[in-house]
Length: 414
Image 1 (tube, rainbow, N blue to C red):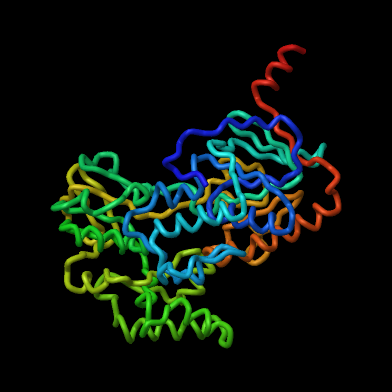
Image 2 (image 1 turned 135 degrees about the horizontal axis):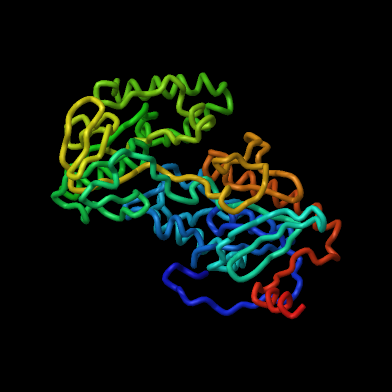
């Protein structure tokens, strides 16, 4: 399987009709959908705008990143992690796993295919998917670009005036690049916490902005057991809100009241909050102790960015050398998919667990707000649904590829 370092593209020319569903995105969601289809005897075509699988993980993650949940809850369907991998694989191990997964199921995405537009043709009954070189036509379209397709940068007054370096967390690699600097980290989620911890470990002075409440669930593990695993086990026997209350009680017992640290917990429990908003509860991996000791300083919302620093809503103005925006990601679906099935924010209008299927052969995977567990369940449902249709029409050719240049030449000739 091609890695991001292997930039040179093998020449491919699709000139004949091929009977395949189209999958947009070669991240975990796209790979899972393709593998599940393959298992049921249905081939697929993955279109990926980057030059490798899982480009978010390969290009836009920091060096110290590990899975926040045990590997048991992060496996793609049909093929698990190697047994020798640790409970919490590193980002490099997760990338190796996905590359091995793609190789195992003979998944070969078509790289450097940026989908500019996808639209259903009601007259002919198929989807037209336009890239910079080709127009693909298929009865089925699977949107697998996910909730985190592009970096989200909020509007912050004066940000363009700042003379130091400004970068999104997707560009951050290591705190070693910020040694001896005063760094403002905007965002108090898992990324903001981990980046602040990494900065301090590399002799930087991190200031972390927490604009709203923070769902600090608990340490990642309780007496050697995954907090998330405990929650999943309890949900088999107890209602969600009761489990949430237990998690909040555990957090208070183990971490104490964090309001005085500037980390106010929301009234809504972490699981319910995740289901409603998609915000992932913060699982502490060491940052909290440094917040308590003052090594990581928590600040209120930013009022304004100045040329040399920032003014905060609670009064003080401080100088900084760099600003890191740990402000998350968002869907890019509205920029290319013409469909009423998605909201303006690029999320299916139909809530979980029914948001995986739209009309006219449209499917979505990776938009459940439930991580890789949600991805796996959706991929299995999608594959079964398409396979049932596939068996009914397996004598038809459902996808064709037309080079744009050829199409233009024919148009000019006529």
